[in-house]
Figure 1: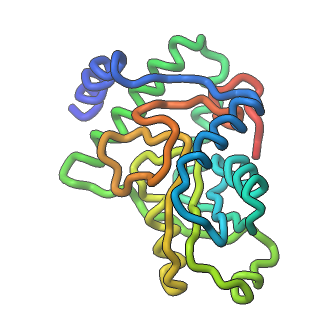
Figure 2: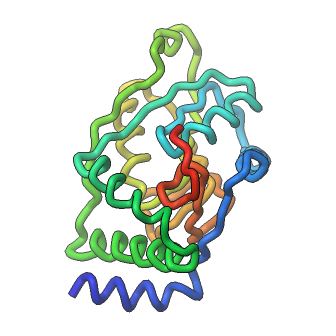
Length: 208
């Protein structure tokens, strides 16, 4: 029933949910500039969420001349899902767009059913030397990723650093869910699915 529901819902969403490509370095830089233009306060630190948020975080931190800390949220099925999606890159673009909308719809409905929450994941700090965190007067932190889906990743990262009592603002290129657990403070697109250079279904997908 859930699959049929997602199929029907996904079909209805095809006219509402956009699927676009942001493939070139110029595309990514412009999206980051559009984000920066929305900032309404100053920040002391940028935290980027790998892998999708790596280039976004690096670009914004460089433009704002801010220290950067990279983290990663690992879930049990992440690697398995990645292997399955590798076949997508060989499919026609129109079919890939349909699959993306269906996948997003299925994900939203599966979490909405019985008020289930997305599974938590382990947070790992990827930056080799992060001792600078204790030597800087950090108050406002910009948390960046390529997208907010359910919002579970953002909440896990904020919880991981909660003992530091930082003020977080969330900046993403797109917010894909209708009602995520947390809304981005800054976003370029809403209810838009984006194919980035590092997406598995992007031709010549890049690892970041």
